[in-house]
Length: 436
Image 1 (cartoon, one colour):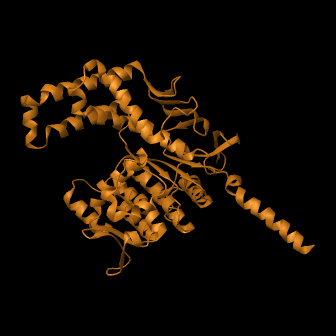
Image 2: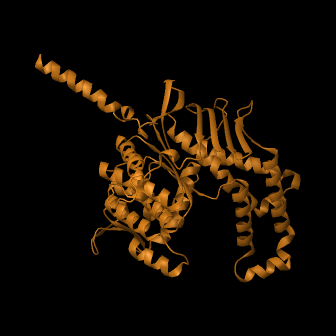
Image 3: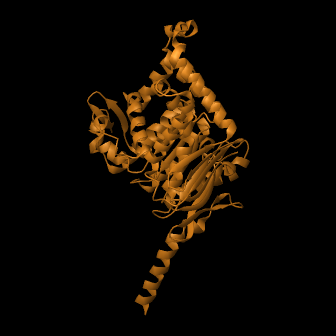
């Protein structure tokens, strides 16, 4: 079991999200709570990583009494929560519960409107044991011979971080890299050449961490993707999934219409060998979709087991490109075992998922047939798929309603066609008026 329950948080009255699903799609009007759900899932998943950051903070252990460690850890989580959602004193009393296996973390407001964290006793005890181990290593462990012998290949801090990371992966039963791709991405592309100088202190936590991720990933794209793949296979042990990598690049070229590189004189898009533009002058669609494509490709190439949260992948994209990005996301999930949650306003995105879902239902039963309509590595499994609309009787009363049809194994077409039906009725009325 890996579930997040949300009660009375922002526009969300009540929601239960099953994180065991590989692909989940959320659709709803503006301000209906899609971003709130994504950020809540992201924050709950990132508690594991924030715990690692705390354990690697030597100053924390050097300047505080052991009895204060866990309380300071809770204060640190509170600061991270406020960085993600802002101040809480004006909020209604909410409750967020993240349950995984037999463990549970609850986030709620106290009477004064301040956020509080509650951990299961067993989970708290295991985190405190890691804090004790970290303090001992920082305060006196680095002088031991066993540590000094490791320093030939890597620093003691790197070894320590790797050790705690593995322990936390086991403790939280989650070894996936957590990646949040927010809306409004084109601004970062416009400012690409000033990105390292941008101050992130006034941004929310998700955008800060997204900028940090881009800064760390740019260096991988010193050449075009085909050359990058050749260099990767020469320098890294292990085999790549050639079929998935080639198909991912093919889809990226169809969506992006160019090759992205990060060269010494800036980020460029190559349309041909000698025809290129700086990223800051590229089209709005290319700027919006760039880092969705590049991060998905890195996951496929390096076979990274990731958890992606993507806001509005359709932004500024032509409908055919929207279909292709859905195929790329599904390809990445199938190739790496990753999970994806995305928000959308686009009926084209929903229809594209329907094609992949229905292909799995129909073509999945056609054993031994050479000719296929949808390649097997792009199909979506109904059992591991979920789709919801944000629904509610009042403006601030929102809950999740599944829009999957058990019989057809697809997203219900009545919801996809809702806007079309409204416009068709208006058109029919106008035609009747003209006839009269």
